[in-house]
Length: 342
Image (cartoon, rainbow, N blue to C red; front, side, top):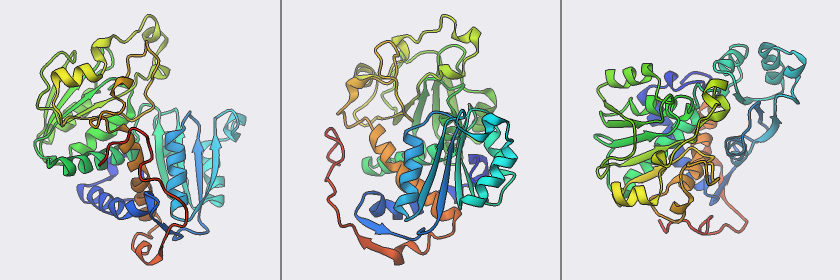
């Protein structure tokens, strides 16, 4: 892996497998059973020029769990770039303050431009409709954990990607990661105009995977292992696309869809946030409490995976086991009231 994490294109299968192994070693720390101070004294710069709660706080928590501290910047309006500062200048200045930087920006390619100006590790926290590599890694980690629990294998798995496949950067990164593994079946279902970019379909197909595009969820998915659904990214629509757009219930993943068309072991994932307003027709809240709903296990997995990314980029992954001690505070057995027993 290079000194930055900007795109999954920089990751080989060996790199990904290594990160997932390191993430598994981080589980006791992420789940608040052990403590390490291996990054004590290190400072993370979190530069989020686009709205975020979960990703920003997840990176913060991961860095703090390793013993580091965080400097947070949110919003373009309150940054020096609003005064005309270039990405180059911002990068050089922040690199003088921080030992690692996570950046989210609304323009595709902006994080790579920022990273080109520094030797301090930079992680892409999302660049417009481009990529979100750490999300894809935690998604793959989640799939691997869920499959292990269910006795399944990634080889030959059937994965459904649905929702906004055009602007959903999480699915762009995830489909690339999945394509590094043994051939599987990938079904793509998107509303008209929001289909997966053709170059990504061609890439996956060239690596031996079976890719099928459908125009609705009204099919038999009884052999489906994973359904990964995404919010419609209306903030990235052109004015022409926005006019009169509405998402029908035909693209909603809910309990009725799972019960009628899927199986008892189909895992439901979503990168979040999900739009829970009644007319949004995003992932339905009627699945709350259903053990097939993995979205909160998915977000929890973001901590060990992002810890693994920091530990690898800052070259301390081999030091962590030597620096562990038990926690001293109360930790609940389950975080959420609807969490599945496993």
